[in-house]
Length: 461
Image (cartoon, rainbow, N blue to C red; front, side, top):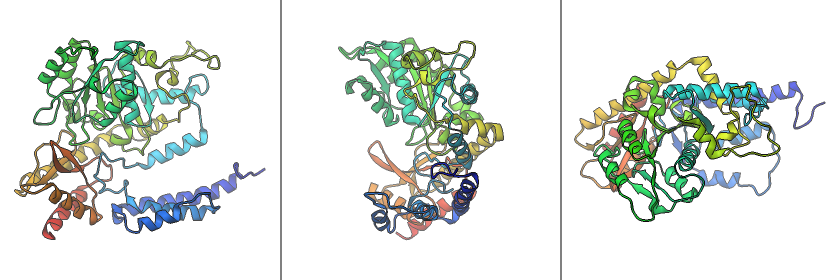
């Protein structure tokens, strides 16, 4: 019997065929669409604003989604180079659809052990990518912010215990803001977050770290955590991980590497050199929805000593059966705050089973090549300041001998063309435009569009 919440198979197929047709039309837009469009946005928002839901059929809903998707920024466009892009490879949608239809519970091993095995496979593959040992454990999260928080919790528990004592965290001003938020949510006072200077390449200064760790301010607590960044948001700078680990471990501090952006570059020869020593860090954040090009909603935290991650998060309840020791599968809910959790690992499991590692490595190498090409072209142009050679795939630049407002006006003019979309940031009090190549849809044509946009925007001023 058909029910509105449980349609008959033929009804469901008919609905899904319309959804598939809509999906195909979205993907078919490609480079012909604009990277952004904020025209008529107030009118659209007014039309969408509902106090109570007005009934509509599926075609009307898809039409509404189509109109909404054409406003704001277009994250699946090959020219979307703002922030650290999340380009949304179609395999993500396929996996999420199957995960939602199957709807397994993968929080504990006893409920859906075969599905937990698939998720555990994907986690182990990530751990092997960063060359972690077999005792490593981790979880897939909603993104890098939750992964970073989970790592801070693990580090605090491992070094400070459960006494809620204060302790010091060491970061640079280029670290992701989620880490300061994680410290605050963990109850650490603002003065416990110590900012370590960076070198001229915006990488953590190891000598300054050594000096900071040696200090012992009254009441600040022990140094328990050092954050290294494997690809900063501003410029993609990669901190010297091996040296940081050596210094921090001498002071018995946990080392966390926030490699949400750069971790996937471990698939490339350049990335393995840039991130040398990451396998000795105590924990790592990776974002498959960045370097693996998946849709939003998939981060990952790995801890070298998996027992430390479990000790920080494990809680017992009468309604949760004990772990079946006959199986080697973890209860994933023991390793994070989430008990109810979506089957996130299916994305990575399906992608690697279907495609292997190589297409991802090739895409990352191409993105880095395009970034280096942009850096080279702008460095040869006396009109620009391009201070930092990309460690990964981000180029920061500004107009030479011009104001911040002039640089922002150039970015706005480029974005208004609708071919590429860039963002801006502030470094050492000065405004820079950012072009971040991290998109499997990019090509040489993307770089050409950007260079043409820069020239045309300057000529029109």
